[in-house]
Image (cartoon, rainbow, N blue to C red):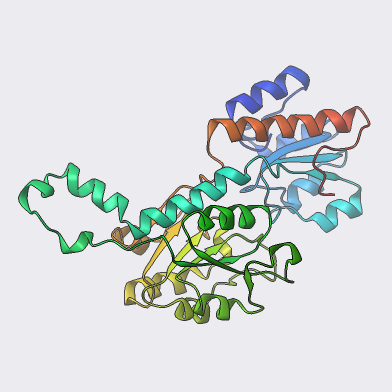
Length: 311
């Protein structure tokens, strides 16, 4: 294991395998030199992935079982070239991530964190009316979704329950989603959306797909919600747009340089809601993800097909 991830996962791994904990080594390079002939599998997560250095240091590596859906921190092409199998944990976290996207949207529009502080601080007793706490409606808004995969579709289904009009951008139109409006340009999608939700995978093509032009198209009353990867958004442009009032608000579960969050975002507590990359962070989902990590390893070493193969 490259880092401590989840105690249940570690316990399940230790029932079946000899688990080496890289983070406990005083000298990581020496540790890898001492064990590089016996390490056949790596368990990591979406934030750490598998560095080129770690891959090169493990000549006997057969499989990377990732406790995540995102694969942007693993060189899949190099893994395929070296015959290293890769698995992830799709599907089991779809509902939780979609739930959080809706939760962040409501939290921004209805200013839930600011309202909570208003009550707890005693300010409600001192003023019957607070201009700061004028809210915005979610029901009936236009919701644009960048990436209509499993999670994007689940977000759309939930937003439909609020009477929202759904539109989306993806590499190609989705015939099964003909009741939604497709925009081939993210700028056009943003221009026709009150709320723009980022739900796409991070690739070279989607890095900073939310740039200044997209943010300006969303506009001073628009809200950006990101539950994908931090680098899908040009973070400095997002910060400046919020500070200058060119964007109405943001609900963010992911950031470019986690766990470092720009101080200006933290200070914008009336129009920005922040979460610590917790989209899949429920007990039920994390257990399901852990079971998939272990299940993929067991399948590999028993010579069976992986449960959720990527490579």
